[in-house]
Length: 198
Image 1 (tube, rainbow, N blue to C red):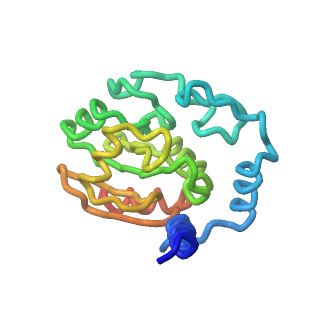
Image 2: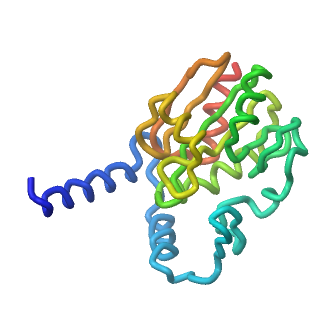
Image 3: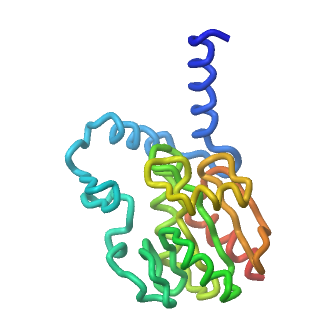
């Protein structure tokens, strides 16, 4: 293969990886909106400081009602992104181990900050966790192959054989009971959590 063929193959792999597989399709408007943000049409509205803290508009990474609360729900020490009773946290090994020890149902969302599918689904995830009323469910946003992924997150992907972003895992009793690739809307989150809670 020459360099041009390798480049074309890489492009094709990226397109396939960011295309929803299973579940509902993402509305075209949401994809176009994300593309505009990536193209810089909304430049200046989102400010990244030290590649850690995100501030800006409602389209930010974290729910504007959360993100500043640390360790206030369930004794978790990491950043709470959404939820009050069912919390959705930025992944840390310490909080993950605490959730495992508590025998809660654990939801892992492997998210890449460069992926339009992940970005389009993120508000649905936040809305679902903000409305969930099941204290036995805890969710984690696990960065995957992006500039925010920690070594712990890289190891989590290896541990569970995750090879593509927008993969979701549901873990009960320290075992993966379900694995999904693709995007969900808020109602699908409720359906999946109801299935595993039954």
